[in-house]
Image (cartoon, rainbow, N blue to C red; front, side, top):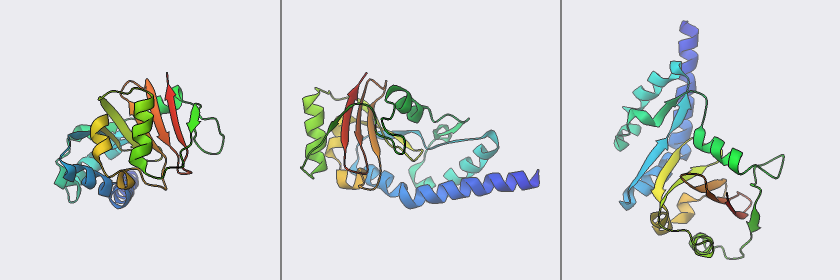
Length: 185
């Protein structure tokens, strides 16, 4: 039992360190803008790991955000990520690329590309999920506020990023290869 507790603690420590290194900077950038945002979830963990995460949230640097305990879900289902995969299955076997028409833009300005996709598809101001396909945190933010952010810092080159309607009815996906995809259910 002692060994199992230690393994659970180590798993949480490793996930926390990874998110502090890679994701927390993005959360800080969004936080500094003053736009309203929240986390749908930071991570999904087993019952035995949950308390270790709650303890982490009370420590620096997590405590700077005053996140609620509800951002750590118990279970095995990263439900927003699962909704993405169910509604927009991949066309490729070795990497995720949703089955929709690919939008290729020569323009490197991420804000122009995203705005063009939003305008072309008549997407209105609404809460959306913003998340990275290979990471657990899921941010909820208004679509128009997302356009005001420094997207080069929020939508990194080296990561697959999804911007999805809360109900999954539409998806904007940017692959790390620079492919942009829009899909609608």
